[in-house]
Length: 219
Ligand SMILES: Cc1cc2nc3c(=O)[nH]c(=O)nc-3n(C[C@H](O)[C@H](O)[C@H](O)COP(=O)(O)O)c2cc1C
Image (tube, rainbow, N blue to C red; front, side, top):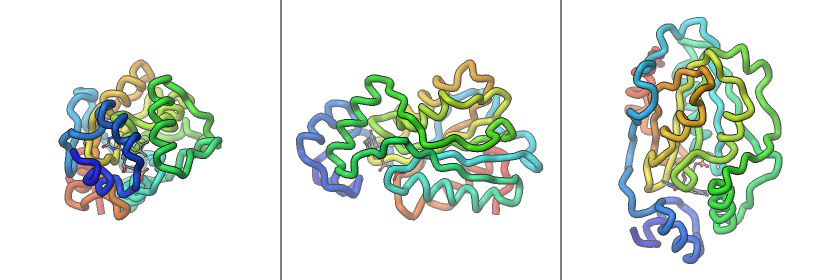
């Protein structure tokens, strides 16, 4: 993929040196437009059996707003069939506002398995039955902030529903890595969805189709 189309896809101006390293690391030249869902998470649990009366939280990290937009859409759609709270993950130390610097820092953190300190955690996380967890794609995987959240919280007995936004790379390793990080936690991880990053959120049809499959009756 050409630098010019990457810039367009990510809606940022990025120095060419960064894109050279990005290409080497593999977040361009990939397919993955539109929506995808991953089959490589737990095959046993693909549906929440009963959503009514279940306490649900939508936890997400968003650097530039695309994942936040999808989180809000989900909250608006499932509000009838479950009691829903939202929680935005924020890192103690803010990420750089300069995109080129951010991209390099993100690469370093992901390679090192760095888990950033978080500003806070949700109150009474143990009360929730269903956890939607949202992340942007950073270098083919979930953000360090979301990994940090997964490592800090106790997910035993919960149903986890991952959702992602991405640039031109698509789902890449996001669902697989989320499931791997939750392995042994006692959580049932449902099928993830990935949507092309857009400040307006996910295409409604695709979002509805995925949500219905998870067992929620949607508005
Ligand atoms: C540091 C960084 C790395 C990224 N790496 C990838 C990638 O490997 N593959 C991809 O498809 N998109 C990649 N993107 C694009 C984001 O996943 C996409 O723009 C996403 O929708 C941003 O979500 P947000 O607005 O919630 O932060 C990257 C963006 C950033 C900032």
